[in-house]
Image (cartoon, rainbow, N blue to C red):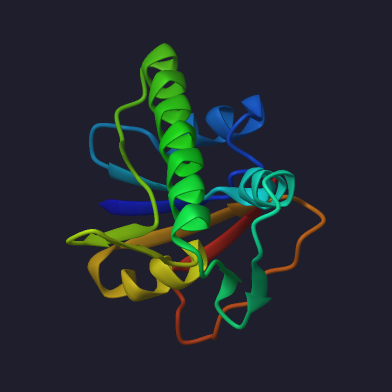
Length: 148
């Protein structure tokens, strides 16, 4: 089975996430983890005085400086997850929700990216904090939200 796990950047440092992940990690499953940036990106943008806003597709950053900063944070998140996976002996491919087109950095909301990838996976888990609410259309029945 091919499984996509979209994990909020606010969850990746929780040991509970890796414990949950061990429940689906087995030789029959190929796991792909789509790592979000969470509040780390928002905080860094605020600290840098870089404007952003939340639109219908999540956080929108217009400046190249802001996009580069967000990319740098996502790459750090990715490396952190990869290191934790090695420590836990979990085999998975880690991705970030960014597409680079020549020198253009295109950030994509992680949930939207997971929905775009929907036809390509047998199961999709959206991992987020307990206090957040996530809803997906009923016809996207391969998506399961897990609150940690």
